[in-house]
Image 1 (cartoon, rainbow, N blue to C red):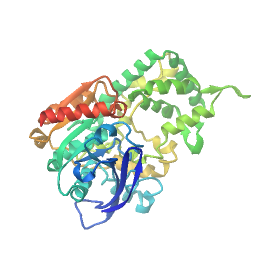
Image 2 (tube, rainbow, N blue to C red):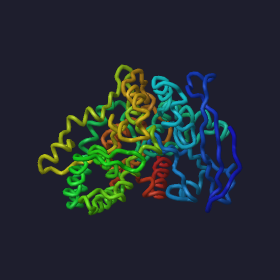
Image 3 (cartoon, rainbow, N blue to C red):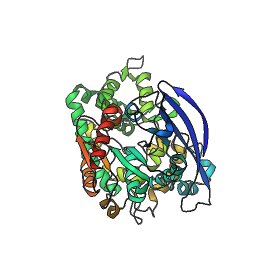
Image 4 (cartoon, helix red, strand yellow):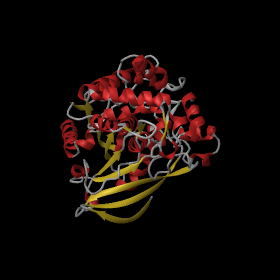
Length: 436
């Protein structure tokens, strides 16, 4: 481990840490990669007297949030913890994976093999590798948001001795569901979010249809070379899973067109906003690995599950909607083959993505027997009708983990740990301590 000099932000002292870990933990003497994590301590507190809290960000593919001062849940955490914001492998400053770095691995075959080591199992092994050097061997508390909660569930399955407690927000995965089953459950939820949006903003029905019809005639070229198709426009529905996402989508749609000498055209402002929302340049691992996080049957590839399952939900077919008078339905947290032809950040990785989709040999991520005998205090916020993580799947898992306490709420959407900040974390800590 290497540690840089500490520095300050309002109310906090930050310290950068770098670690060397095996690429493949089954081969500890093989290739190594570098991890980065940022330690945050409240100003005026002695870090050596504080227990550690490890934060695992949602994703996959996102580095830990770059807080300024004591934002969001950090305000509560810093009252009693020394917080470690870990950039999971392949994200942020932890040996990032993208179109620029992956060619260093060689052929698409080699890139796909390399990426097979970037799931929750490896992330947990990373955490256990770095923990002793930071804590002196003491266990720590883990806070997992969304995919970070998937990682926390893996942690409980394989290394519970490393945990004092596990706090999970919007991130209890199904222990057994296949990728196909995940998306079969997802599309009805996404449809409900669409209908709720249109009930709130009925004027958006015609606006969305008009934009889709325009794109059906001529896909738009976005800044940076991104190509906006009807399917890409539909994927803006990913906003509908956030607390203010419906409002963001409404404001985006209302200013889509401007008059020009050649007639109405999609405005530069709309196209730039759409590019910012749709580009995977900052998190390509999300697109590459999104279905692999559900792969647990060694004999079965994910095989573009979201694309295949969508065919069984014809209300999401834009052509059919535009041919009739149905509202256009936006999609949500789904990755499709066309993402790797329309996004310049993903296009060079298309063959690698195809190989990952066809890959077999994925191993189970969770141990139901060990979870049924769990002794670590666990508390989980489960959001009612969460668009990203199926509520029924989460509650089934909650019943399968011994001692887990749930807080089921419709006060927040999937981003509740950000929106609710200190209050959400305080509630989870209280639940975990009641169980302990």
